Length: 470
Image 1: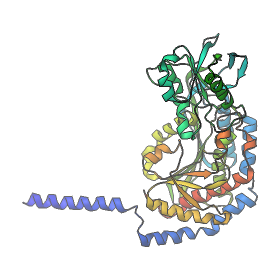
Image 2: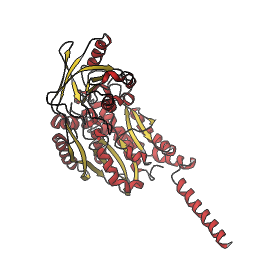
Image 3: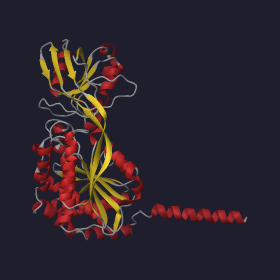
Image 4: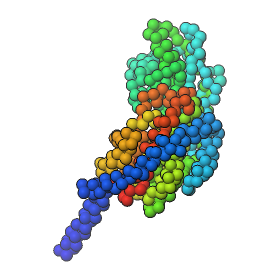
């Protein structure tokens, strides 16, 4: 009887503790009103950030820094000398900007090299086909592969015509619906073609618009399936071959690819901080990825995101502000291969997950900003909505659902609130992973606005008295 009473008491005590833990991050109505007042008190600071970034002495700085960087370094594919030079460049630049704790954190990343590549339609006429081999693809024999073409518009059509595919080069002429839906052809196209006996695959670029421009990207071979060479071709050439095929014209293509997969390379995530004044162990991450594909300049994907994240720390430092929590800049590496550097960063730092307040990443361009996307509890969303109102001077106050970012996904899946920049991406996939991703795509006025938003959100979250609920 005595044991039963003690057991019941213990259970009640545990229940009380658990309820307390579950509720400690909830924002009760009265407390939310207090937090609203606290957020509103940052109105003048937010305006000073906006004024400096958009109208003041820092105007166009992120654009000018980015232009010098990409014009000097060029594109920065995983494992390349260009990426090594980019990391060295940024390490030096961040130190010269007098940021704190500038460090290089070692990671291992894939090292794939495309080598020389070409494709030629030789029947019914000779025509050069613009191609970009897909990341991780195997190469062809030295003499290349010459084979008849089978054109399909979907995986379903490939299955229906599987008996026709053996020994052929499968050309996918899939329509662009959205990047998220259509990218499966780039990711899985080679393996699906190999399953039905194809010797190579050529995939219509994952883009809604083209001026004879192929787009590259990573692809994933399925385990246990023969690896065949794979590349993207232009929309124009995919449609050309589809028209010929619909008229029962025989198409023959010679494909030559010198792609090589090297052992994983040593690399680094590049880190810098403004250390918090009151809770330095608690962290707000602002980030973008430093690597790019080996075409264009990587100015849009993701030079702009990386450089407005750097700009956030520069603006805060220039205004003499020091938030209560640490704001940490992370320039990821190996993002294009699936967040390889970020995954290793998470493994190294997940022991500190309780101190991660907010993870922020921008990787969808720095075009005209529309607002911020957010993933987190409703109580945290209510606070973020109030913070967005501080951006009323530039009329960009909307908070959208579902933050997006390969590199911060590991933290968000573990329950850490996440934020991403949302801008007008109507032309983003025109240039994505292509030779068109250059500084010509960037606009200094838009980058100023993006930097202002990024800085206000990061600073206010880092300086609130309490962490975001989670």
